[in-house]
Length: 139
Image (cartoon, rainbow, N blue to C red; front, top):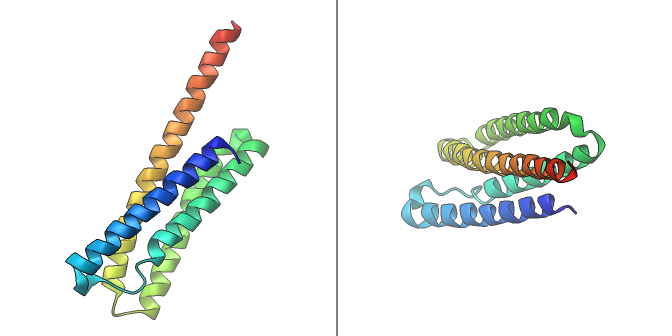
């Protein structure tokens, strides 16, 4: 396992615990009328998809390094489509909690989207900086 993948999994797990714990506490204690039984599944969904995303990205980085941007964007589109499918199915199956679920799911989606963008931006910036330092050392 690469350092990048290990760091991503650690930070995503930490984010999942924070979002799941603080969000669950806020819903259950502060807004108990908005709490719904499916809440814990939302952070777990994003963690599992994050594991899938970093595994695919890591695998493609070794095999097809030139297509990293396309793979990354494909993973983003896949997450959006799967998220939309999950939201529609949940709203059809559990109609009475649809509003709370949608708002919570979208908030979590944005939180994980911002985190992933930050993480991969820092990864690429550090990679380019390291590559530049290596080129300066060789010259």
